[in-house]
Image (cartoon, rainbow, N blue to C red; front, side, top):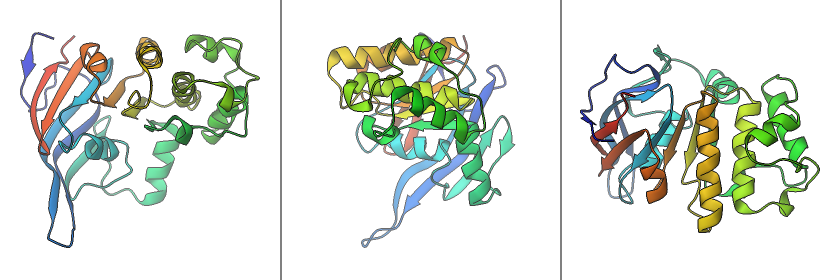
Length: 238
């Protein structure tokens, strides 16, 4: 990642998600706090994009805006060049079910623990009105032969792998993940990084907010944030 880009959008890279002058401000008893300040960014439609920066830099807030969970205080959010600001809550929910998926930090928040591995996949597909993906998808994500297992039989890394498989079962166009390795040991974190790479190999772009140096090292595009501001973007033209 030798090349450094500015924060300006560029037509050289096809984008799946975009932000235009996005700011997020939260009210507090002592006054408004700016979590994100005037961020303009194109998320490439391929590869692994990592949002990096110290705690409080705005990574998770920006990820929630990209995931359509939080509306920005000002600015625009784009999906394939379509501005989403005027969509109501129902329309945004439908987009989250079919086009944009978020994998949460805690593995247990991503899955139904009373269902088997295969049943979780099937439920994800049904949510998006898609066919059962079957065992093949489990093999793609490095979970062969686990279809009949209960969730509690999986390690934390395997649960995150399954969560990623569920996003693919939904047919989502882009996968977002918030600190997906933060609660995992080194071996499990490596498994998750491998799975993220497997997802991008299937031509599904992935956006991750993370402190993990391994994820930063494996990024195709690295977005640096500090105090809610976009500092620089590295890579992204491959």
